Amino acid sequence: MSITTKAYVVEEKGGPFVLKDVILDHLEPDEVLIEMKFTGLCHTDLLVQAGLMPIGSFPAVLGHEGCGVIRALGASVSNKSLALNDQVFLSFRTCTACAPCLAGQGGACTQSQALSFLRTRLDASKPSPISLGDGTPVHGQFFGQSSLARMAVVSERSVVKCDASLGFGDDELGPLAPMGCGYLTGAGTVVNVLKPRRDSSMVILGVGAVGIAALLGARALGVTNIVVVDIVAAKLELAGQLGAKYVVNTLREEDGDLGAAVRRYFPAGADFIIDTTGVGRVLQAALGALGVGGTFALVGAMPPDTELRVNALDILTGCKKIIGVIEAWSDPQQIVPLLVQWYKEGKFPIDRIVKIYPATELDRALEDLKAGKVIKPVLSWDSL
Ligand SMILES: [Zn+2]
Ligand SMILES: [Zn+2]
Image (cartoon, rainbow, N blue to C red):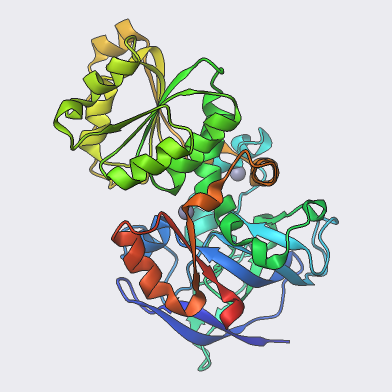
């Protein structure tokens, strides 16, 4: 049985998001039909829309921070805990068989580009589950989900169940929609990769959703020595309210030398630096703030020509480690429930960065995001 629903379709590279009727195919045995409640907007959607990151084909339905309710289950879904009407978060899809996947680090899956960007269905011989009314195929299951849609046929591997005992109403899920990407990336990098001690010193570059999630993740672990760096005073004020002990605004003259500014607070340099900006000159400047034995985690999406010049002697004498972390090297099935639990307990107040928009107002949400008026815009599908 096919279903007609509404989805944001990007017709071609660089084209706008246009809300259209689309047709959904029947479920394959390992797929789940989701009625979307909320979808977060992430910069990766915009990079793909602009043609700066490749996907299988256009037209395409993007969106990879969905959450909603199960409306149908494929005939042989392997996760037997999934049932109709379950609230679920949608995340990226992994191969489940490579070394990182087997080690519980699915974010580092060696097949992630194929499974999140290039392919639609897991079984590549099957057509995309989405088409236009005239039969034109539309690239679907972006990140296993293509959740900029009212209804979606998603890969079961993208589905993370929300613990029903937490008692969230469907309308309360909005702030949590980005669990599977933005929040997982920021908080998961701290919790699963850096694993700071309570007395560790940490610098977070950039106050976006990923930076704030990293801050809240570190605070939830009891870390207090945290410097947050940005160029927007209002965002730094929010970071201060959410637990940053110190803030550095590199546009202010006295903070112009980032290394020196951080060393005012951490004279020996930081144990950990997390970059969420992907801006080369920020990375370069921040390197001077990393202490002996410190780790610099590159988390932000960055243009392919971004340079970071490292002096070999500096590495040798300073024992500094620079790592690139994709999707926090985390298994969504492990980290998402932990963050949701922390949110419920008030230890991860991520709702402070979210603004909910009716699904019809995607353009306004993106304008506000670009203008820095909102950190994490989330669309609500209830209005459709
Ligand atoms: Zn894998
Ligand atoms: Zn994302």
